[in-house]
Image 1 (cartoon, rainbow, N blue to C red):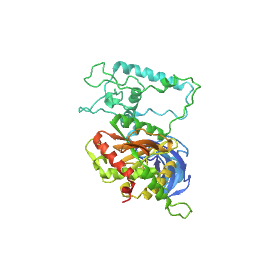
Image 2: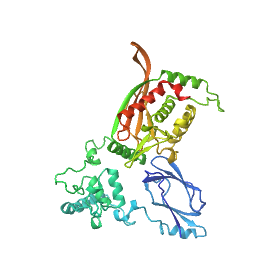
Image 3: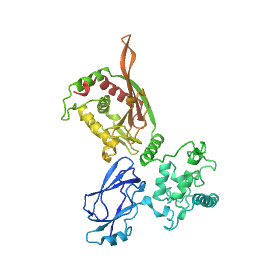
Length: 457
């Protein structure tokens, strides 16, 4: 029987991927561990290794294809001793069962291959959708439950509702036996009639607020005054996670100023004594951000109650300070993680950060290099930004926003002096880190920043 190769889920957030490149061609022999393709996820470009032995009989999805759903058939391989032509001819037969999220119960039937949509197809489809919605509006069906308050819904419908921020229990199901299917979620998301009031609520209960549709937004502008740039997978994931973070995490903000004159002097001294590498360049060149990472790691060790992650069942208290650092890349943002940063020297942190940042910009990070972490740091000082507040990146309970260092007048012992000041703002998940605890963490951070010798002893 042919071996079906499916689009893999290479990260927890991956729903679709781009087939960047095939590294094997039809007719090539394949062994377990061979890299057969490069897949672009929402975060990185990753190698896809074969797990079976055989011959690549047919490539179903060509390289360059975008937005290929996870678990979709992308190629067929003939098993050892199997006829390659027969395997290619039977492409798709005997495929592994689709994931629950791809349940055919919630998907419309595919159109026959020989039929091509007419230019009026979109308008006709919209008209049919409106006609189908009319009887549903009159019937106002209720989502069927299992008797314990749990709504019957397809896995795809649940995921779509979660992504749209809609309570699945508020969607009226039109599937078999009142089951909520993908079409119902789409109708609810578009502001249609599939939303229903919660059980026991008055008929006038407000429905969830939905953002204006694309058509309504475009109607505000002249048709020829803009161009539409489709979102790539990374931008979609970033947008969804930011909305989820602001909707589900109660943000609380604390801001302080740190004097960094001693830090700048220590940085210059350390860089001055850098030995020369094999390429004739200094073996290291510390940045202010390297000191910030180290200071935050040590502060978390000094205030361990702030080195946590919130879960509904209990607080996760971390034993190490794994610091995520926001890195701007074309089209988005990635947050590679410096593991056990409290144990690393400033030079080790600098070297690790340069490597991670380079591979992040090339989208070559492994999932374990950008997932998890205790906290995160977002530094916009190099852009001249004085101060800002960052959005927490789950599962973190905090994120430190770092502004630029600039000379400002301050008062010391009753006298006005000029000092280099850096403003930082800590965003906290108030469920896990309240105001007093956040202030304690910031005070520890400032102590290390203003006395950098404490980072090297």
